[in-house]
Image (cartoon, rainbow, N blue to C red; front, side, top):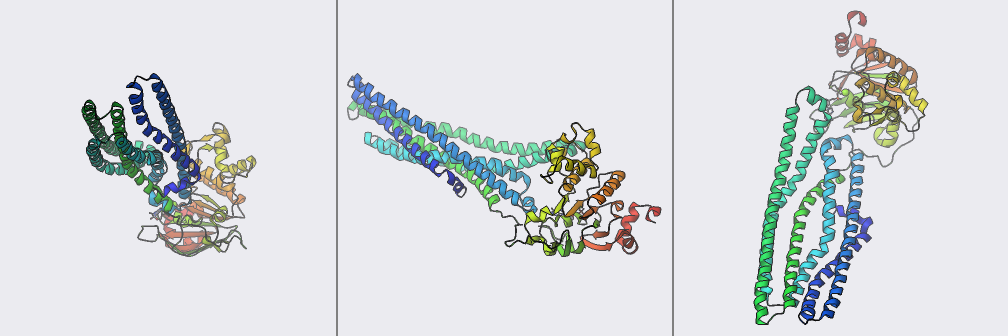
Length: 575
Ligand code: ADP
Ligand code: MG
């Protein structure tokens, strides 16, 4: 956790002020019982009203000053802690954004969310506590003992018994509480995971009537967390009366024996009053210290999780000497590429070699799971290859900056993703520089204008989070328009026509052909109709290339392709 505190550097002056004000406040607190003793001895016992007013006034001043210091310290320490939270959140966010898909897969979404919200809150809370108590608790404990002994030594033995007893009680309770606190974070992760899955998959859950199953899953995670909290609170509930008992017995002992000493004349009333208060201060500060010992491990567990995120380096980073000059435009070449997903036994792609040129359409066809999406995810470097090279414009994708690389590519993913915002904002996402006319034109080419005009507000129609208020085919068309406004060198369509009816599919491809005649186009498809006009068709089978050629060539030579074709087209269509 202390490694995280290094991020409070910009707040160093504020922290120093907090410590100073806490110091002053504690000093005042320690002084008050002595003043009290003076008032009793010099004022009340002597019947000297002037003295009472004089010392009383001074006490008011000390108490007021103390309160002021406490307010300032509290304000500043909150500011520091919230500042640390802000810095940590943005660091975590930055780091997660730099992750390649490998690291995101490794952590999982739920825990990344808990880590950047709840865990950071824990650290923030405990920082406030540390700032406020780090100085005041030990100072109060030690100062209290010294001041108490200065007042009177005959009652020392009461403290000598009470302090170890209290320490024992606290140690016993803390040892039970700490493991419970450590477990809470993982349980919150679990709730988050179940809840997220439930919300994202709500349609499927309802359609498959698994509402009860999901409710049970959530219930289990929830009850698990609740039980943990109940255990914690049971211990807390037990702790308070125990500690109060020890404290009250201590006051009782001090008053009882103090009373005896007073009646014998060996102690004065003021000293007794001060001693009682110091005893309370000492015990109270021990309580604070123990609370810190309980809270710190919990925040520690959170800090470890935050550090994990911060210390996991992105698997894909820019090369040190990046090449950003290119002699060609729009050339894509795979040279003997093999790729394995982390944790998978078999490579998802094996020895893939082909090239695609500007002005040509390269289509990739193959059954589901044959590795089509994997192949094209390698082009924008979402993952790095195990061996072989992917060249764009003659340069290996690992040798150019990711920004340059991705600027060359208009990517339409298999699962169309839209963001909350208007339709035109979603299209503009591809290129912030474009005019409204460009957006209209892109929508035209993507065959989206027709439906955009029928919805409320047209281009200003609000898309819901995750694009749930448009159909699958409409989503696909909008994400095609988004790639079009980018005017990239290379277009990559991952099964982007699958949710379109045949007529729209044909119209869209005809419009595209005209629009992006100059660019390099790579299309992944399942339907023979979508690929048959392509200049080059690559047939993928179980991660390997089974054949490359035109529709006609493959139809004659390639068995895998023949099977795909015969399963989709009738005899006459093939002929
Ligand atoms: P296609 O797009 O041709 O349907 P994919 O490229 O999506 O197929 O998948 C190819 C193979 O890689 C499949 O066996 C799939 O299980 C596996 N795969 C896909 N994505 C991942 C991933 N993120 N982690 C591990 N394995 C994956
Ligand atoms: Mg796919």
